[in-house]
View 1: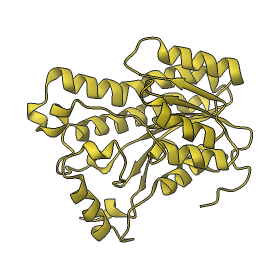
View 2: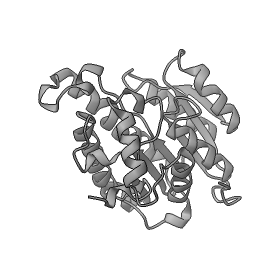
View 3: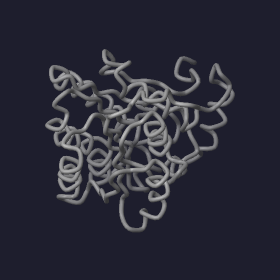
View 4: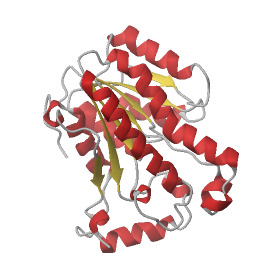
Length: 258
């Protein structure tokens, strides 16, 4: 899908959550770049870097830096580098989530205190911390995006602990949109349908979710990372200047079906 040339020309953006070239964040980064944005990308650790570096090269990223949100100081170092490089930030994409495997594959009522806390910290509160550091760099306004899923709204078999976590993420997004709106900063959530990414492969019986989406969605097909990137590009652009506090579904209409 061709992005409108120059739609994001002159804008600077941060993309967090690229795992490899098949990840949702990679699809968004490629769309942002095609629309003219200058980008900073992050990788989790040295083991992950070789999988992220090709994406950073493909989009001509100005910055590629480590970011493990559980490591104190890394996020602050990242935003200091962004300020030094550009002096501002126009948009960011938060596309990270985590749950310990035992908690992810078990019932919500059996989740451990530690596991539930880690899932909330990595998947939700990291977005809050990111917003706090980004706010001073968005002096002329901006847009913050995070990534949710339909399991935040309805019970989805095998999504388990990530359902309550994503529900908390969407609520947090709405409160952030209210708090940051007077500064011209918009906050929205993307909610893609099931996409075959490395992160999604950790969900039990994920193949079943894929088949249900294909057969029940009005469009009878899965959304792609390119579809998500196209909508993300629109949302961070000035064309969506009055869109905030919104959950934007990219699922072929699956969420409207009973």
